[in-house]
Each structure stands twice: as C-alpha cells, then as structure tokens.
Amino acid sequence: MSRMVKGDTDMPALSVAMLTRPESIGGCRTVARVRSHFMTGPTTEPTYSSNDLAYLRAEYRMLEDLCVDRSDSPEKTRDAIAAGRLPQPTYVLPEGIELFPPDFFALLDSAGSLAELSNHFTDRHRQAATAVDIPTSASEHEWTNYLSGLYGACLRQVTPEAMVAKEQLIWRIETMTAAARPDDDAWVTELREAVDALDAIERPFTDYDRQRWGGTSRDSHITAVREKYLS
Image (tube, rainbow, N blue to C red):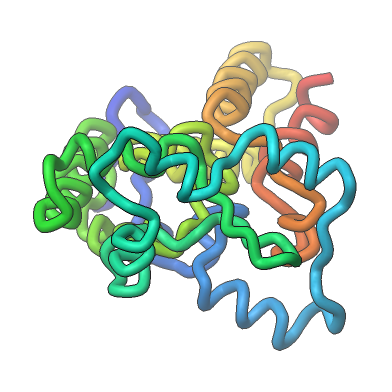
C-alpha cells in the first residue's frame, strides 16, 4: 500500500523513482541531464541575452566578492570545487567569469567545516523529507545535484529544505493537474496555494536556462498552470 503525504487524504506519496529521476529537479537539471539534452536537442550553444547579463550581474557574485572578509580564498575555494566538495559555478559567462549565488557559503557556514558539509547537507535533507513524509533515500543523490551548482539557477535560497520543498510542490502540482477539477473551488484554491508557494522559492531563470534545458519549471509549473487554471 502506498503511503500518503502528511496532510493529504487522496494523494499517493512520492516514490523514490520520482525523486531520483534525472529530470526531477524540474528546471535545475543535473549535469547528466543537460548533456543528454544537448545530444538529442538543440544543435547550437545557448547564449546569454542582454536581459540575462543584467540579471546575472545584479543577482550573482564572483568568488572574489564572496570571499571578501572570509578565511576562504578564491584559490582555496576553487580547489574545493574541483575536488567535488563545494558546488560548481551556477553560470559561466562567455568571457569565462564564474558566477555563484549570494548564499554560496551559507550551507558551509552552517556545517561548520568542509569536512562536515556532506553529512550536514544529507542530514538536513533527510529531516526536511521526513517532515513531509517523502522518501529520504534520495538525499545522497540530491547532494550530487547540489554540487552541480544548478540549484543556484532556480532557488532563491539554495538549502536542502528548499530543494525538498521544490520537489514536493512540483509533484503536488503535477498530481493535481493530472486529475484537474477546475470547476471545484476547493481544488482551485489548493492548486493556487501550491503554485504560489513554488513561485515564492523559485528564481525567474534566464533565457540561457530556457535554451540549455528546453524550458524551466517556472514556465511549466507556474506560468502555464496559472494561465490554464488560475487566470
């Protein structure tokens, strides 16, 4: 018998397969998913629009800026990134400038040390997953996704809790729209709450993201759902 998500009476719980499928990030694809997309999808390299560049320069930071007033130097941080102990840059501009989310060091600071970061991430992810009664076996897989740096493109705060919330909200929206009841006011209200909650934690994404991924979860699970059911 499938489990139910806490607070729900008619929705089956997320399965481990749902949580670990490569596309499950819903717009923050894994590196493997991006490579696969290019192999079978676009034949040209994605490019940054002028709006992208203005947004990225306003919202993201270079390591040199993030390391100011820290004991972590840019060189030491890049070594940790290369060793797979800290996330990759979320964006790399054509001139080679690497950009990171402003909270790049927040999880490391919470962990207390680089040696504790992986366990700290996994523990927090499992706690967040347990709180909403979804499988915790995907937590180590999500550590790999975190290290890809791609969550920095889609989450306003790159935390294990936000990653779990995003996954659950995307699942909830997909489940509800698969059995749509647009004439049911209660259904519409519940769907609106889920979409608004996803909107609150997701970034707007860039034109570059839409090119490299063929779309984003904001397009498919927020904008399109609002247009179809909530306008």
